[in-house]
Length: 297
Ligand SMILES: *Cc1c(COP(=O)(O)O)cnc(C)c1O
Image 1 (cartoon, rainbow, N blue to C red):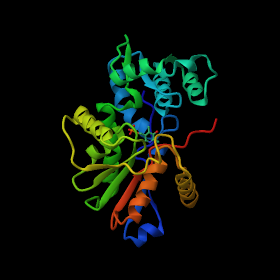
Image 2 (spheres, rainbow, N blue to C red):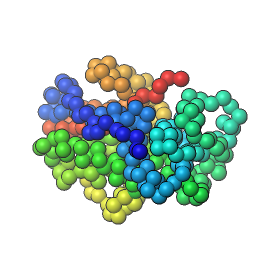
Image 3 (tube, rainbow, N blue to C red):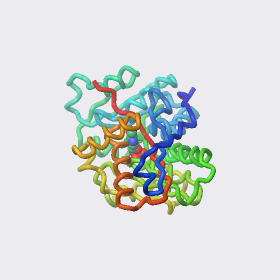
Image 4 (cartoon, rainbow, N blue to C red):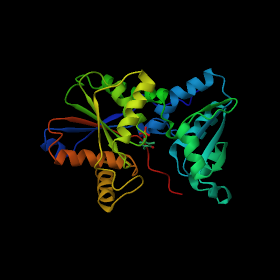
């Protein structure tokens, strides 16, 4: 059985005076509440892949990631829920002999077998993403493939169901790592609303090409209703400059929402920045809360 999720996830308004002053609205789509052990967009992207793995009669799941990969933990938890084996190919041969960090320890507790590989070998494997192992269903690094895009599209379909007047003044915003979530949201929107992706790493040009490739993989065509902004990565993946930290802790306290820093904080930061630049006047902006903060330790 697939790990059941609490769907549709809640859609909640944020009563923010700056948005009100600009004739705009801010809403949060709480995908972080979808599932306790496979959170947020990781559940969305895995769900159709898990169905396929089970239908194919796979005995295990295999994927790739870094030492703190949320995707790797999600795959381990999902495999365990389905009674499947799991293997994680982890970047960094030097980690093999070290004590496990909390993230890898959690994956191992869920039964995942970890294989540590040199960075250069990892690049070739994860980039190709097509390693074959008898009986294993292989998921690419970050979990973004054509099926994942279709899973992520359900978030947009839920919004269309919850907002009767969903239309041209709607902007649906999400953070972008590999681009699978943005690709899905754009694909799942009806005509009218736009998808806005906030790059959390330096990837201008590259990320646009990834989103387009994922649309082709999932739907065999391209979509015109999305855009990426690149000014809000804060210096790169995992970087949280003091200004972003101040903003995220203010938002979390003011509105009682846990703000994950690597992704969600940057999407919210961008939305406030664009509002202050006058670019979201009159818009109803829905930020997809794609995940939870890491448990500490
Ligand atoms: C993995 C992750 C993302 C990135 O999603 P992509 O589909 O890879 O762009 C965004 N937000 C959170 C919280 C994540 O864990």
